[in-house]
Every structure is written in structure tokens, then in C-alpha cells.
Figure 1 (cartoon, rainbow, N blue to C red):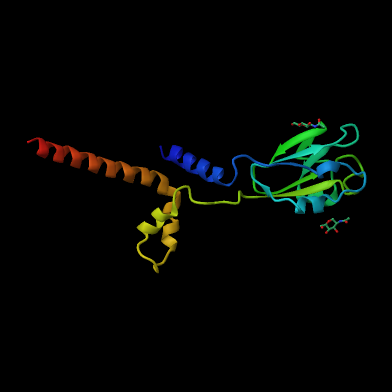
Figure 2: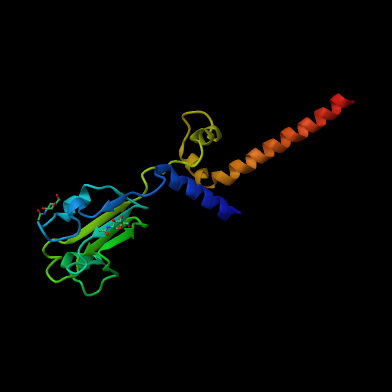
Length: 185
Ligand SMILES: *[C@@H]1O[C@H](CO)[C@@H](O)[C@H](O)[C@H]1NC(C)=O
Ligand SMILES: *[C@@H]1O[C@H](CO)[C@@H](O)[C@H](O)[C@H]1NC(C)=O
């Protein structure tokens, strides 16, 4: 029950920012190549990657590939111990976690020629509460008080709100039942 409620809260929070992730083609029109020495660092810095986004590497699969590597291997252009290898020529990779993801081309000489990209994925922008803040404010009393305790109930507020509504509903129902009985008499 608590887990289901937490899941609902999480889904609501995740859905506030964007309903579905954006798709970014690495290098935009030029794709994943060494021709013209695209600056993939500049390309990456010009984007704002979020969790849930997808990046797509498009390239000629006969002359390039995509290796996901550690930061050390990215820095050193080491292609011998990739965490993942992609070779389709049209690889979609989901950015599910926050933090840096490092990709290089594993063909000798390509990474050091600049065919590598550092994708920095940030959290979804809106970490807005899943229900109106007014409820948080009303329980915290009037203005001026120390506001930090109001932040604590946020994560567990969902189920509590439901319980509160249920209790109020029950009270109204019993009152109506009692007064209805009185009128009939
Ligand atoms: C690529 O772009 C980055 C960020 O703008 C810059 O710091 C770097 O010097 C550029 N690299 C080359 C080789 O031009
Ligand atoms: C890559 O795949 C996407 C769909 O996932 C498709 O729209 C696109 O046309 C493909 N590109 C190439 C060059 O095959």
C-alpha cells in the first residue's frame, strides 16, 4: 500500500516536467563522424540533457562505432574495456540516470581525432510537489514560523492526504446520517 502510494507520487513528480523525454541526435545534422572534426564537447554543452531523454548516434557502421566507457577511458581514448558497445549505425541510448555518460568511437585514431562525447544528464527540472503547496502551508501554521519542518511531510503527504479526505468524508457521512435521522423523527 505504502509502496503503491510512493509509486504514484513518484510518477506524478516525474510527469510534471515533461511527459516524455527529448531525443537528441549526437552532432545534429553531421551525426557521429570525424569528417570536419565536429566539436562534440561544444555540441553537448549546448544541450540540456535530462533523465528520460534519448541520444541517437547515426553513422556509417562500416567505419565507426560507439563505445560507452569510463571517464578515465574517455580521457585516455582507451577502447579496450567498454561498458557497452553499439554497432548498428543508428543507436538509440536512453539516459535513465543522472550524471555523466562517456562515449567514444572505438576505431583506432577516431577518439583522439575528437570523436568522443561527454553527455551530462541532469535531473528532471521540476521537482515540484505532487500536490498543492497550500496544504503544506496550512499545516505549518501562520507565516513567519520556521518553515523547514514543512518539507518533511512532502514525501509521505500523499497517503496522509488520502487518509485525511477519507476521515473527513466519514465524518460528514455520519453527521448526515445522524441529522437525517433527527429530521425524520
Ligand atoms: C570544443 O569546444 C569546447 C567548448 O566550447 C572548447 O573548450 C574546446 O576548446 C573546443 N575544442 C576544439 C578542438 O576546438
Ligand atoms: C534511425 O532510427 C530512427 C528510428 O529509431 C529512424 O527514424 C531514422 O530514420 C533512422 N535513421 C537511419 C539513418 O536509418
